[in-house]
Image 1 (cartoon, rainbow, N blue to C red):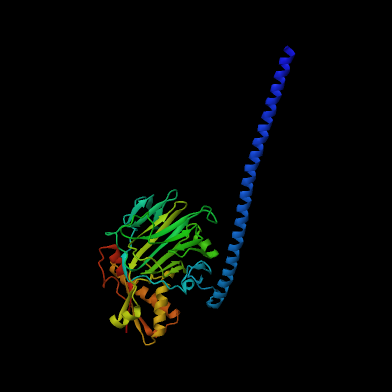
Image 2: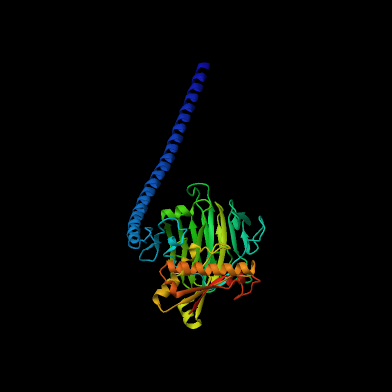
Length: 427
């Protein structure tokens, strides 16, 4: 009897062991099935990505060929290709930029950006204290502060969290139908490429909108290699422009021209996007970053208008420009002035009877005599540049007036900015 009970217990243990083995095999089979499914998903994703990469590469090759042909057709005498935009039938740019990183007037030879006639926001941060919040920008989110960098004051947007800033204005509705925006910016990136996906946004909103709602239209720079403008879709930047844009602490000039439904965007010498289908109603703006990288900003300027200069010559006998910019306290012309200079050259070539007296003007900061000398030097520098661009020196004379002929108050930063100008007087 005892032997029978022992045999029965042994049989029960064997059956239990079999069941455990069966359950183990079942679990393994199930695991293999899930693993296989995951493997197949990865394979499918990899195949899909490979196909997409090949399609993208093919598109890039086609675009590159088109760019090479276009650049060859408009190559300048210095051997460097002029700024180029390749567009499709739907007006969406495919690849933009080209040539070397633009930092001289010759690099900007095809630049056509011209700033507005009247400056409505140009904060002077030179006297603000380091580590303080900016006095002329409203911080909507995150952290931004004034810092000293390479001998000048800059606005720093911190790494580590999303940040949003907007011009601090007396009204929420300050953008006119026709306006321009300019500023210099740089990424803080310690590597040779953008390791982390990131975005830098400039958004344009209605006055009644919250800044975190969908904008009327927007510029987005994605990972320093592509832009999106309004409804124009994803626009890939040329490799050399993208590389320059993502280089650590390298300054780049960003500019916008908007006239109702028409909008153009420039990075350095290149027009990187354009649209004639902008939504109407933009009344204010902001800059947003995701905080993957720190951002430096300086020389922010918002201007209204942009009238035809030849019509001004006919009706007023002169035109005023704030688009010819100089290094601080010097007569050295900045490269981004080339759009205005090109416009003057084009006018004088089309109307060969025109002759101009070039007048330099400053604001009231500094010593009177020093301002007078500086204005004379700047007027002479403009003449020299126009002569180098093909205008006969017999058609140009120069004068400097320093701070003696203001056209706006010197009590505000924007007033001073309007007084710093170059005038072309018809002779």
